[in-house]
Amino acid sequence: MKKSTAYVKMKCHCGLNPVYVPCHQWTVESRDKQDELQSCKNRCCKQLECGHRCPLHCHPGACASRSQCRKKITLRCPCKCRKIEGPCCELGNSIVCGKECRSRVQEDEFKVKEPKSEPEEKTKGNRLGQIKILTALSAVVLFAAVALAYWLMQ
Image (cartoon, rainbow, N blue to C red; front, side, top):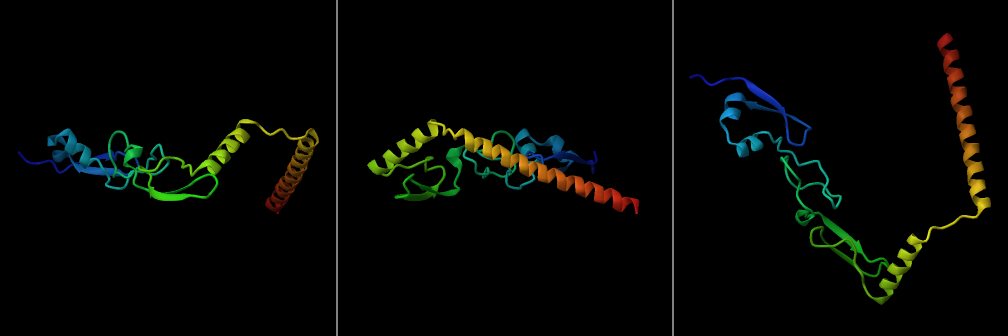
């Protein structure tokens, strides 16, 4: 029996590139080998939960976990006294350097929890400024539209 010379066209696992696989090869291979054939071999473009790009090549299924992320990062404590560098998988999200730093972290958390209220006059002033800006932008757009219409009539 003669092997088929046709190719199967499909999207790779990451969905960015077309992959062409010989039909005869696709039909006889195991599922694991088919997954390998369907890969475009480029680095996966998806993001991990830590925000870094997946370190694996184009693959089926879920991406690597944060525990596999080897991206080098730098962490600083909130008071900027201490800095550590290392792979993302080995460092947490934050570091604490001592009493001084802990008190600053607590102050920052308190500030975040308590929303700042702006004086009413300042809020009105901001709105008035925004209205003036929008009015000026509207005038510019209107002028541009009239100029374009005039130019097209020429």
